[in-house]
Image (cartoon, rainbow, N blue to C red; front, side, top):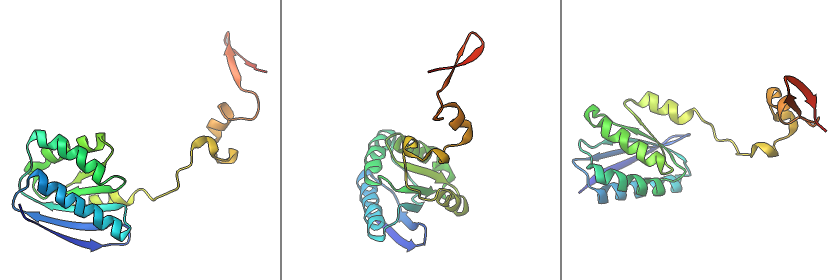
Length: 163
């Protein structure tokens, strides 16, 4: 099968436009690999794919492709735009299966919602909660669990200070 894949660079994400008459598993893996290579080359971790393919795969190919695509697009937040509403159920199932295997996919019907979803989380360094400074812990948690003062335990309806 043949497909056409064009790219448009944005500040926050990479936009891809996929056009094909039909699809098979090999074609899907080929264009997902091409998507990954372009994301790596451009340095983007957010991807918006406008998928203009009027058909989709059968159920057994969903699982296979979901697992393989999750590995290919690992760490890439991907918004899929589907202009064919009759395929939404199949594509939602594909996104769910891929997300269960470690992907970060979401299906949308329009461009504005997809862009909003892609931009709602800004990249922040991940620091484990127990390495954060004491002052950065919310006060409601600080008093109860992370206070340098000895914790309190409930005994018989009264609070006593533990040593």
